[in-house]
Image 1 (cartoon, rainbow, N blue to C red):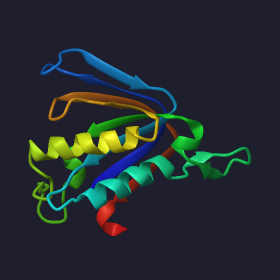
Image 2 (image 1 turned 135 degrees about the vertical axis):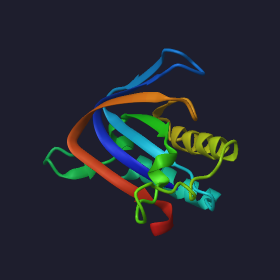
Image 3 (image 1 turned 120 degrees about the horizontal axis):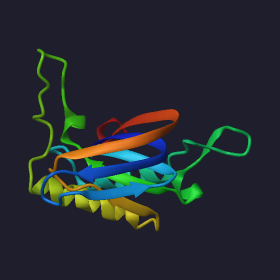
Image 4 (image 1 turned 30 degrees about the vertical axis):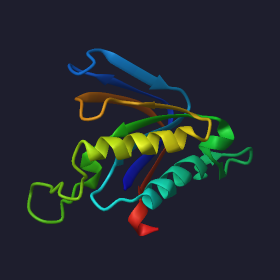
Length: 152
């Protein structure tokens, strides 16, 4: 499982045109996460990723050091399924997405990740799986972190 985490002042997603035209979801201070489920991911990968998302200390404390997690702040999370995060562009000019898990299994695994993160009590909003979405954010910092459950 791979994910790109961005510390945000705010983030939103609009879904167009189908399956939910005009669907809009937004979060206040917290994280925007673009996540990709891969073919060989297991429950252990999902658990590691959920724990890392919730507890990664990338928010400033009173001294200005990155020492607080989104859980510490009670921040919000916008979690977007994005198979292109698993893209491999090492060869040629067109990325390969062979590592990305195929639907409908990928949807089930992504939903399980969203539930695992939400079990922390944080507000977690998602886009619509496999939909065309426009994502907006105000990156705070900017702080952007790449996570790979296989590199743990």
